[in-house]
Length: 475
Image (cartoon, rainbow, N blue to C red):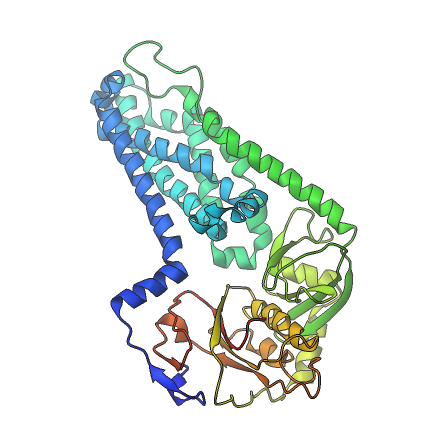
């Protein structure tokens, strides 16, 4: 654990951490996200509860309720929640729409930055309520088979509603398992291809309710068809336009984006520099989606842009871990034997950081997002902060402290050049005193930071893997 009290920072003083202060910090870091997820779970519980009451006392379903009992109302209530979740599951992954909404005032209220996480929450909710729906129907099949003197297995495996139901259940289990972060990270091709089973899922769902397993008391005993299409058609059309827009943008930009340099770094990190086309705009720390047709024409992977907006090229640092990144590395000519040769050439290098200055100006706290190479957002930020100094537009000293609790890419960070060092374009004689201090930590960010330099802001971020504390004038 990093002990700031015993560090070389001056004016160290402890901060009293009250319950209200910790709550405020939690709300700033994670509170909005968990509040909205909790709100959505509450909506699901309310939908399920209201549907239970409705189908228990609705006159048109009294016969089914008497015959099947609680399993009837449980199946119908779970079906309602499945309809709502399945109608919304595509919306969070419509990146173009979400990016546009982020520019509106609505982004201050709803955490659209966590749209993909919301997609996962909805997906696992679908799996949960599908198990509830299936378990209830297994009992319903048994009760119907006794009442109609039909073999139980025949109702369970040969009817239209049972076949489509089992198909949807199998699809959601496959998508849920392969969507887990550990499997998705190592076998992205498997995850990507199997996730497109959602097309079959929606097709089965669109006809599943039209086989009339459960009948009303009065005619028409069965609906003329399944009603699910009314739920998912709007989001399905939006997602279709989203995929078309991605292809159009990709074809237009592919003509201008070309690789101009490939650099191998320790820790199996591949730096790819692209020619920066006219009109290309970005902000430090943003990420972009990368597609390599040689590897896969369909897969798009997000990577942080590690170049500063002021630089004349666009770069990404990619850690080679999964099947797609290995194939991409091979396509660029960086094969396994090259990494082994690089490791041998770098063996024994000393990467100790220098001591820290004793006095610092008021700070700027910049929490950085998670990343496959957690250092990459900081690289873009640091390059952007140095740009004003390199052009002579800034004169104040800046001291930066990088806190990282991921040690698996420490070799890469140690070998990467310090963007604040004097040989990185800083004008000589400018009087600039700047230094980058890196700290590799284990569980340092699992609790509140209670002792910091005078003027530094305390933070609690239990899930953050990287943070950069920077003092000085904001560039």
